[in-house]
Image (tube, rainbow over all chains, first blue to last red; front, side):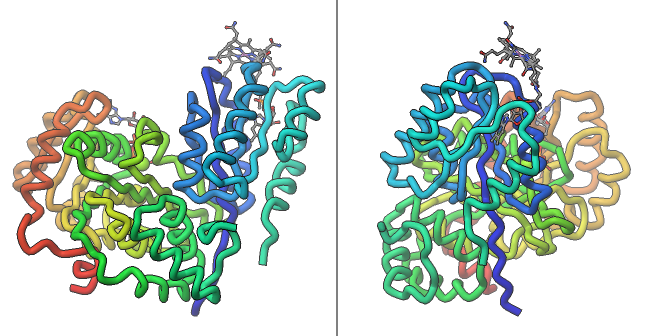
Length: 135
Length: 261
Ligand code: B12
Ligand SMILES: Nc1nc2c(ncn2[C@@H]2O[C@H](COP(=O)(O)OP(=O)(O)OP(=O)(O)O)[C@@H](O)[C@H]2O)c(=O)[nH]1
Ligand SMILES: [Mg+2]
């Protein structure tokens, strides 16, 4: 029996000096419970570590959690590195404390979606599932 | 789109040949993509024929043992140790998939992220996807890919196990079983399984009380027992030396030879 199984592989992590990890753990668990393979990197990662890890793990997407206020620099840096490494097929999304005015700027720069406090988990799971057409 | 880019399938024979060439030259993206293809569909194993003739005789080290005993932390330290010797190191870290949802939380590499920027280290997390035996079905294939790509030491961390999940014995040259103090009954149970097949037994968390008792108990029972404190690195160079002493340096067998024996 040759069964093809292709679960989504998602890297979930935290960048910079941000120690708020409640949200990111909830997200990691929710995606696992939705049948995905979640690679959790833990806290205090640099954008370089995130991108190298994403490539070694061959993930479909990277989800970053940022509550420190450094989201503008950090999301952009990750996008830059993905481009440098010819890995723009890896989608970038995220969440955390991100002011309204920064959302359109970051999505225009290439971040696929941003989820803030109160975002329903169902919506997040549906979004991630939609990143890769199954079949 | 680059050959190692997305949407590559086995029917794309030419693409697969290019991918194999890239793996042989050590291209990380190609290594990653080929492991995914091997994980996702058994038919893609045909690609392994394209890798043949390039075996370089990597040393495969299995690290197994009870959940939470410190396997990942030990592996992290061993990586540093072999890197200081100038060896390229590959790590395959296996975690269990949920039998209900198929999902998995792959957290072994949290302990290994200090190596994420080292181009001489490749770390890959694998989920069991319903496969029994302590490894993923494609772990052996992935080891072969890493060997072909030039990784000289391949460390394989099994899922947290105690007794019967011992597929690692067929894949690794050296099997290290990690236990921690305070696992009285579990250690007794492991004597009739994992500890019996391990070449080296490590009592990790040697800083905790009870370590002496565990060491004494196990030493009565098997010859090769070492104490480590993986969080500080204590005892790791002795472990690395014991591993290399166990691995015969002449008549090197490759990943594929070991698997066919
Ligand atoms: C709890 C908390 C802490 C705890 C953290 C405990 C822990 N281990 O996480 C403690 C007390 C340690 C703490 C410390 C600090 N905190 Co604090 N903290 C909070 C607080 C009250 C709640 C955060 C939380 O856990 N929410 C619950 C989780 C479930 O929600 P969440 O993380 O937001 O995640 C949700 C979404 O954002 C989204 N999401 C988040 N990440 C991701 C990732 C992905 C991929 C996706 C899809 C979605 C997603 O989905 C989640 C579920 O809905 C917030 C205020 C607030 N109301 O948000 C301040 C807050 C985040 N903290 C703040 C600050 C300033 C600090 C400190 C610097 C305070 C200080 N001066 O010491 C320190 C810094 C610590 C550090 N090393 O980073 C500020 C940040 C300001 C900013 N960004 O501009 C906030 C906003 C408070 C404020 N209004 O000023 N904090
Ligand atoms: N005190 C002490 N703690 C340790 C030591 N080694 C590891 N730990 C801690 O033990 C916990 C588990 O370590 P891991 O390396 O993740 O253990 P593991 O066997 O890989 O765990 P699983 O993969 O989940 O089965 C972590 O909190 C480590 O920091 C040690 O030598 N001493
Ligand atoms: Mg582990």
